[in-house]
Image 1 (cartoon, rainbow, N blue to C red):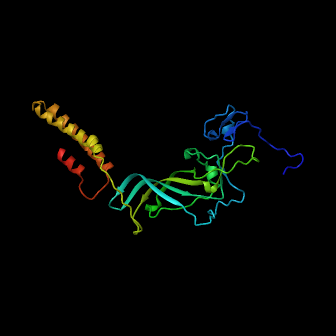
Image 2: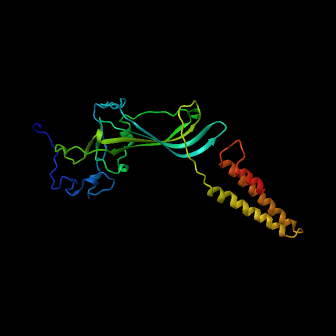
Image 3: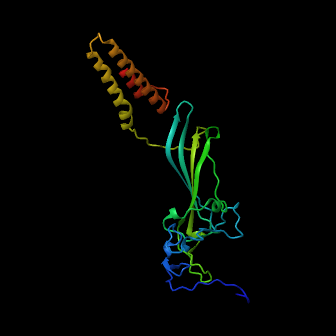
Amino acid sequence: MFRQHDNVLITLTSCESSMFTCDSGDCIAANDLCDGIAQCQDQSDENNCAILHVPQTYNSRSPPQNEASLIINFNIEILQVLEIDDDHHWLQLDLVVTLTWKDGRLKFMNLHKDSDNNFLSDDEVAQIWTPKFQFSPVQDGDSTLIDKQVQIVAAGKALSTDYNRHREDSIYPGASGEVVLSQYFRSVMGRVGLFSHVVMQLSRLSGVPLVTVMLPSCQLVAIVYSTLFVRSSLLQVRLPVSLSALLVLVTLFRQAVYELPRTPYIKIMDAWFLSVT
């Protein structure tokens, strides 16, 4: 209901219901609204593009009160293993932890099928409830959060058009959008008790040591061997070449030892350098 002397903002448009009306009166496809690319000449389709609508009664400290139990999907993806300490039973790795849930108290605006266009800003993330967790065990509490991002995945249909809204936004209820929290960690994890186990199938990248270590060392051995065909009277030629090749081999050996995991047993790479020297 409107009272006398109230100012009411209305939109008069000739656009179809599946289109968006620019401030200039032009019509664009509704899917082009808030996609990061200005389609309207006045760029009005990229104004007021906040995805999140939080009601005043929302409490960010309380989890969603759904009819059933709150379901949080939990996924861990190991990006790379940086270091393995076989002696002290810990490893350092980069991993991404993804949590997915629904919050029926929220509403979302203009969600896109491509969830890469549905990221929330840091200010928006601070307004909503997010689950908390911690790693156990970690080595001396060494777990660093590198980055985090929250995006909304459209999992349902938008609400029917509300003609009381002058802006032709697509409004999604909380049940029609999944909140996806992705956190990137660098963590040093050790062994404390036996809670669970993970089976990882590792594959040997034989091409890397072959090209970076074995092939150069064979070339150095060939260079040193070629000095045997130099006359023994030319010692000033044979000796510097042999010493230089030995120094390069030692450098390659130190580099290989630094990059490979430390183990209490002799590796193939150790035996290789012993044979070529």
